Amino acid sequence: MYRKKQHSTDFLFTFLLLITFALFALILAGTGALVYQNSVSSLEENYTSRTAVAYVAEKVRQYDSEGLISFSSVEEIPALALRSDDSAETAACTYIYYYDGSLCELFVREETTPTASMGTALVELSDFTIELEGSLLRVTAVSEDGEELSMLIHAVGSLSS
Image 1: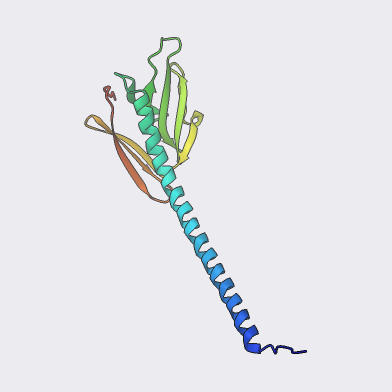
Image 2: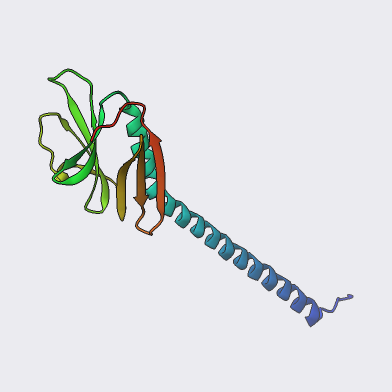
């Protein structure tokens, strides 16, 4: 019988081709993992400040009627007070304030004296401010990574201090 001779170069070429393919597959997978990790990190950084500002903007829009939005304080911490326009027996107030490294919200009956620790922490931030600039509210949130995001909100109803 006639038997074909195998050359070592055939085996070596096939082996090198397989190694090259495996190496490129690993490089591609590693690059993809880094891109994904950077995307997730970027989204997490933007999440906190954007969420805080968007949340306050939405709350202001919900309570945007004459005299329902005012500046107040919770244990000498500046707060935005959003009052309901219900009857006296069911009147309630929502306070939004920055306390202990978090944006907090506290929903209580109007006659209740609020304390800062009663609020629910919404988003962890390194700083948060709400200021009145003319007829606009400037809401500024600083994430724990130092990213600052600011928004001007026009409240149709008048703001009282």
